[in-house]
Length: 130
Image 1 (cartoon, rainbow, N blue to C red):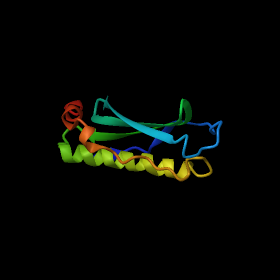
Image 2 (tube, rainbow, N blue to C red):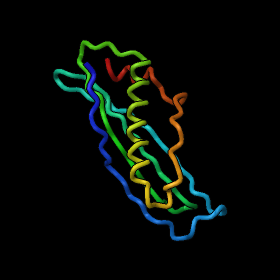
Image 3 (cartoon, rainbow, N blue to C red):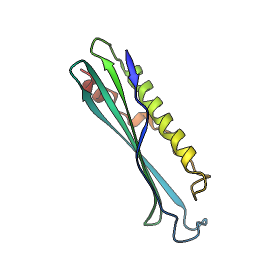
Image 4 (tube, rainbow, N blue to C red):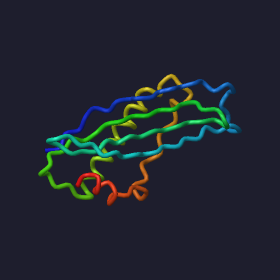
């Protein structure tokens, strides 16, 4: 059995930009993804951590980090498709939380870039589950 934990927002630091946002000072966004191995005496699993940073020039507007994890029975066989499904679900929750919290900020009409699945090393993640 595979269980997903709720997304935990470990960081949400928003600072209004000091200058008015115009076409001349575009807001840029960057999202990163990390996976960590989790292990207990009766279960295995992974923790997924997404972080995004929005900036305008050298000024950070938002630093946001969300984490959740998957707890998996030892006997459960996991393949690349299942790992990719877990990562997609985690990113979906991360994005949903961003979309809810960005309201009333200068980022209210911005969105996170889609997850670039070609950059995910599924083989390395599968090794964490052995």
